[in-house]
Length: 431
Image (cartoon, rainbow, N blue to C red; front, side):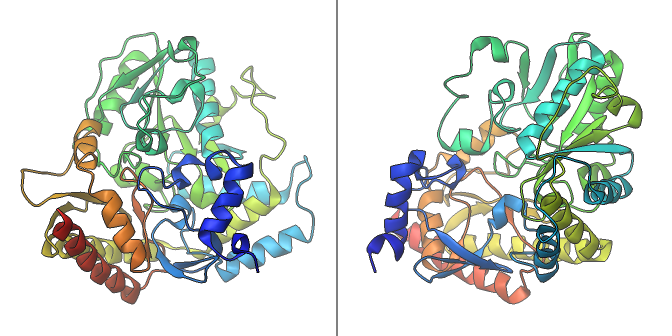
């Protein structure tokens, strides 16, 4: 059998020949950590297996999409049943209504949603809706927050943009970002009547994990109300991940518009944006703001998403958050026992992971520059590979978070803690 079909290196070489950089999304690249990406052939619960037959305890979980873990039987059954009836129609289906009802029923204050095919589309469409509804052009986002790869939102982004050291992107004309304002995260900006909307990750999860400080989200709500701007929560990561009601329920702050993705697709491509019925009436075909998508509300994606939301309860989230909190505390201590400084902040079941030399003064970041300063210590790549060598897969970049799924057992988490202690010691010895 040729190497190209039996090794990660072989598959990556084949990919590089036909796919730019060998990956279909830069965050999958090992560019910031070095080495060759592993190529996944299957996943099951908390684990994935690569083409060489190596199994990894997976804390990527499709960057948060797999709340129940990989290949959950109920999700697979729902997809299989839906696929047998047809994969796409370009017409209304019962599935999109059922999933919309489930989402609206779970999130306080949310009255209507419209489905799209990705988180990027959801945010892009929500911003257009905000501009159309207010008659204003300017938008405000926060330094280090990533909201997809629409031109006007790439400025000062986190996630893959930060990993590659890019200030934005080539190919984005100055005019595309001329009406995009950028403010420091956790600082309430002063707005004026030219601002259509404030777009924020209610828990920043693309500059590693940065929690909102006390009063920040409340301040944004009040400032938007003062000038008539709309507040948009980008809950592509936090939505149905931190709880059934999302970050709005967790923080007690209600936005005007929500953006969802990841979990609501059950592992398939989907996104959604929504708000009050009065605001959503601004959308075509009722109103003047145009938005469309042939594959929006795809029956496979809505079936998978509904299966996930039908499977989980508030008690499941409580148990997951408690398990994650205990894991985060043990993980942080294990890394420190190994000889490195570490901080593992949490927000519900989301975990950050900051690493730095044991010498020096470090503390949990509250904004992007502070997060970047720790990332630039350069310890994450070595730690990443030491963990991968021990069968634990983290995201290949220091600006991502850890995703603990409902399939991760205490035994899995104990395994990761033990690996982290050894990995930290190996990195510390090399300093």
